[in-house]
Amino acid sequence: MMGAPYSQDIRDKVFGAVDRGRSNGEIADMFGVSDSWVRRLVQRRREHGETAPRPMGGKRFEKIDRTRLADLVAARPDATLHELREGLGVLCAISAIGAAVKKLGLSFKKRRSTPRSRAGPTSPRGVRSGFSGVRGSTRVAWCSSTRPGPRPT
Image 1 (cartoon, rainbow, N blue to C red):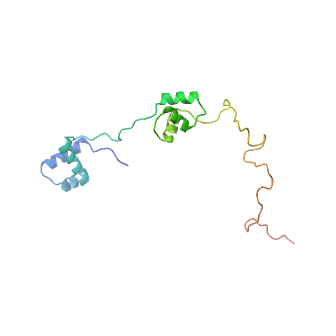
Image 2: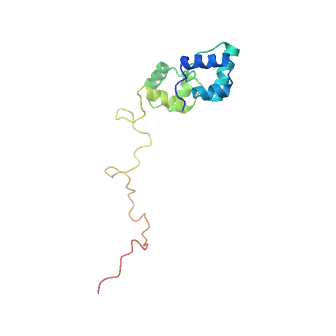
Image 3: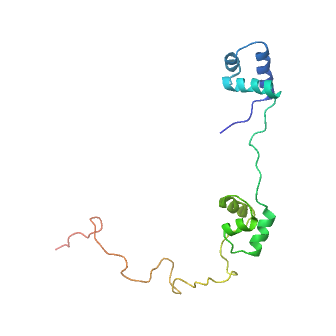
């Protein structure tokens, strides 16, 4: 992970040492910086006239219009992320749509107000979750750790 850029003060001192004819290696040792940083710093001054640090982090922009996304979700709350991406007409990763939905504070959790599934319930009523309903569906077998010991006589 990168730290903060070197201060303008250290940059000015490095430029002063370069202008006095010191080598990049000497300057790097003198100020506790890398030789390659000194070389790049001098090169930027020579080629672009820049002496200040450049902004860090790069450019970040959003392809996704969040207002439009919120409208799409309001119109079709059951739409998948793929369908939302198609509705927006943008070329981006599905995960980007998911992240934008999350930033909007929306979720895909089912609510009682949504229409029931057309497929209907898959488990009988009153049966706890995870119960298959078929007894003996799991094979009963012994292993050395679960086998009971000999009966006392």
